[in-house]
Structure formats: C-alpha cells, structure tokens
Length: 285
Image (cartoon, rainbow, N blue to C red; front, top):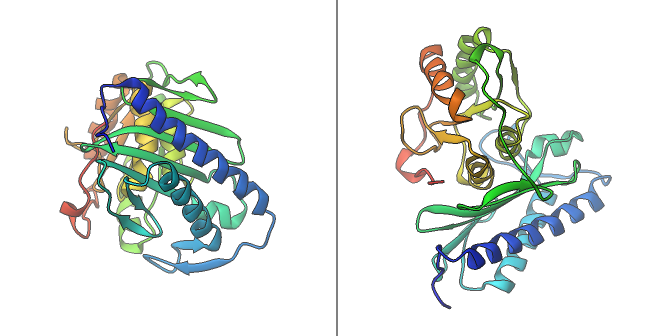
C-alpha cells in the first residue's frame, strides 16, 4: 500500500468519506436496536462505567468495514483495544460515545471515528443517531454538519459564556472536577453537562456551546470531535500551550480561549493526575 500523502486533499477526503460511511451505517444499526432491551454487558473503570452489547456490536461492525476497505491500517478502539498496521494510518473509534445516555434512553450519544497519521488527526466524523446529524472534518479542509460549514460562537465575554464539561467515572476524580466547576460557575453564564465529549466538542464548533473543558479524555473521546472543533476555527489546548490530552482539554473560540483557561487555572487545584501520563500523548489538530 502506498504511504498516505497528507498533502493530497483527495487522499484525506477518501478517509473522511470512509469514516462517514461507517458512522452512518453504525447509526442506522443503533436506531434499529434502540427500542430493544439494553443489555449491559460489563463495566470498566468503575461500577458506573457501562459497556453494552451494542457498543461491542457497533465497534465490530465499524472495524470490519474499515479493514475491508483498508486492510493495512491500524486500529485503536475503545472496547477492543489496539490492532497494529503498516500503512501509517490509525483509526480511532468510539462505537458509542455517551453509553450512559444510551442505556438510560437519553439523547446525546454518538459514533465517533477519526483517522490519524504521523501524530496528527487528519479526518474525523461524529454521527448523532437520534439527532440525525453528522459532523465531519478534514485537516485543513474545515468542518461541517450535514454539509453545512460550522462556525463557533462570536465574541462573548466569560460572564456570558455557556460552557460544557464532563465528569470521570472515578469518584475521587469527580470530586476534584466538582471543585473546578464550583470555582468556575459563578464566573460564567452556566454549565452544561451533556454526557458525550465528542458532541460537546462539535457543539462548540457549531456555536451551541461557547466553550468546553474536561480532564480524563481518552483518544477516542477527543480525536474526531477535536478535529471538528479545530477546523471550525476553535482553539484546542491544555492548561498550557501543550496539545489537549488526558490531563486537560479546553476548546473555545480564540476570543474566549485565554479568558476561559485563566479562569480554570484559578478555579481550583485541578485534579488532572492520570494513571500514566506518558501513555496518552496529545493529538495535534
């Protein structure tokens, strides 16, 4: 297989088209089973961190389609882990981002698929089966929702900003994250906790949230939605100018970003410790 030329728009478009095809197929499958009894197959990091049979079925479906089209690519998937490849392209898959929403019959879960090459996310798709919205982006090619170009909210001061966030499934980390929110909430318009990081990032791209922050994100939480946000014109980083990663992700339009980051730094002693910081390098967007 020829190495991917990231300077070739057609090559990147082929990747995002494949990701979108897989995501739409997965979304159709989820809609077909959503009225069935949800079977919780297992728990993961804690007793509240759920995985269902549907998560695993969707992931297998996506991987089969990706590898049928590109058998030499690598895979990093939330439920099944890593499969090595030789092409230089790695697919990062979250079959159902927001599984708790899915289990409880709440909207907001999604299918997230991204392609990376050389440490950069080059293509990403986030599909919302209930809202029937598909967000897609390519590196340098902008981002869209159902074909419409995305733009974040216009200039807004922190005091009038609607900010999204999320919380860990680990009790001790949730306590630290709660302290951050307590230190921030009086400085902003309000907080939204929607329950799915990929859609939070897409909603910042679409101007439905003015900004977003969260610690503890895994690559499959961040990759596709992060590219959608970055390609809409948002800035993504951690607490310093390092790339967003498991320690902290902040996403906001440039006019708000510095003010939001300063408020977060001041809000609390951020509980950003991770099990192995070196194991989760930040992706570049």
